[in-house]
Image 1 (tube, rainbow, N blue to C red):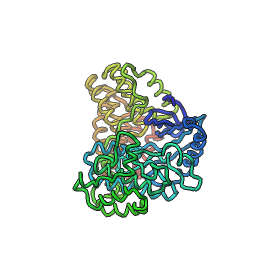
Image 2: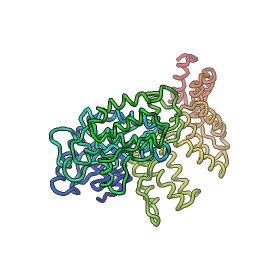
Image 3: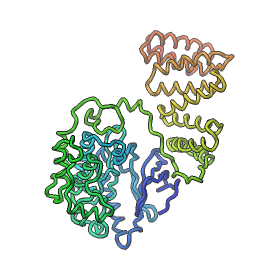
Image 4: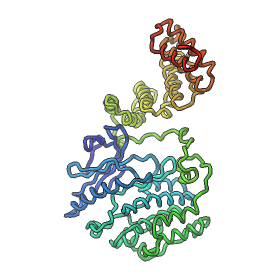
Length: 511
């Protein structure tokens, strides 16, 4: 299955980066051209399945897209669109910013048992909603679970789920079982009837892996792994992690029971057992990707998130071979086209992705890279990503002032834009200090005088003083500004009208 970067699916979704691939399809990051947002697109090729099962897969895909789209739960990835194009089926889903649980586990060894409980409890809430449809996920595993920046968990890939009704598809009973061998329940491995209890077994495998660092049944072949699922007992997790509570170990063993009848009755029941082990209400650490946070302060804002720089975007094209050099000029042309079409989010990611290659080709301080960095900062501002734009603007201002002096107009403009970022980020004191430092340059006609910018800076200073509660200083600043604007442009000038209205609101001037 060969798909090219830049291909547009359904006349709307432009494929960007290949992030997953299997025998029957691929998963791409993409851009919704209509709404200018990142999405994930799954492409399936039913014709890669032999015989009548291709038609069966197509029917099952369409049915499951419709049914799973009805599941409304914050822990499930949102389905935006679905359909077919030529021989392919496509599913458009929410783009999730975070780390998959497999990577999260690898970065935290040993995984805190409290985190494992918090992850499992969130998964129980998702499974309970899914099973009520009723749907069985059938492929619950760490790679299909995302931990978002705020610690909430999102379940991916209901695309292999089987709708539980009398019209069970042939794919459920013939050919290879659907799912991943390491997380596959015995009844699923044997091609038997599956149900919510099948997902609970997978949850047990996942919990065992989080607590012990490995799945309970591993092997060099899929057949060997499935044989162990069928016939071997799991190793109790307290043998390797004695600090794990006995109640948690007992729950994992019940989830991993070979006989579905011996497992917990429902995801709700598992949640009730886990709830006794969840942390009490308290103050979160503020660190990203902490799955206990939703329980420590449910629905609370995360103040630290506002101070955490947003992650850099993934490259917008597949990584080039060692001998292949990215085409910087073509990327710049693409950015211009996207900006002309108002597709700012995609333009930002292309600029962020091409900057390292441009620096390698042309040099970090080259005019090409400097121009790209200016465009990157400006586009970040246009996209409302002020926290990411701020350090870029500060670096540009420092570099330019070192080269051309503090009064250089370009350096001052970078500082002005940085002050705007501070203002937008709700940091009025810092913004006020920056504007005050800039004002003498804009008022000095022998340096970088610009009456229009000087008036704008004075207006912003007045409003920031007002925001900081200094009404007297705000009035004095705006009243002097009104006098100067009226003297230069007359009382009907738009800025004069705006400033007069603000002063009237302050109650200091009669209209």
